[in-house]
Length: 224
Image (tube, rainbow, N blue to C red; front, side, top):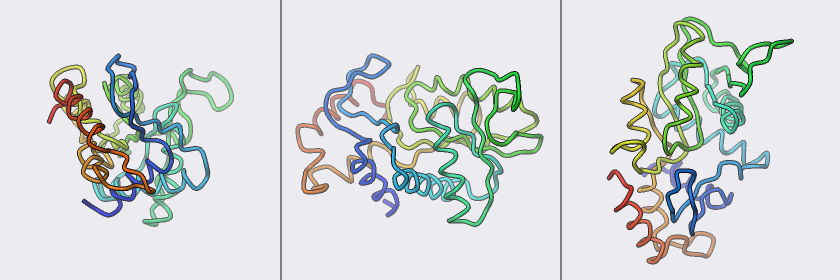
């Protein structure tokens, strides 16, 4: 596993973003783990988060893109932080763009925040996590309505590796439906590999009991 992935997993735990316990997801599933990107709240956390995203995007998609699109609302700070990090780490000016939940009809009118998207632009979409792929149903039509653009791919923080609407995980369903690549900085397999029965800040985060619950969850909902 690449070093930046191990660091990112540790970073999620340190930031109280990735938790283990008893959680009810929006889908109604009872999950032994939960990721909340809204817990990144400080300047240093957002700086590091942007750097991890920038590294993963650079490793996966290279530099041949123009715009980072972050769907409202959590995608807005993600796209801003990552464009800053991309300039710092790789010396390339990527434009950020996000959407408004409601179209503005005065001043800076329209559905978009940040840069406009124009014909010929190559776009990478950035999100925190996707379980059902529902947000893409809103996001992709907005991006493609801006002109003759190419969506290079999607990058999320964590691949939960569970079924979306059908028998595949949400990332694979999005890839099949829209025809672009989908990737995550880390997968839950990598999280378990990194944390199982290993101390993290003096504490074992995934012990035998949590591991057995994760295994049971994937036996019911997983796509391994």
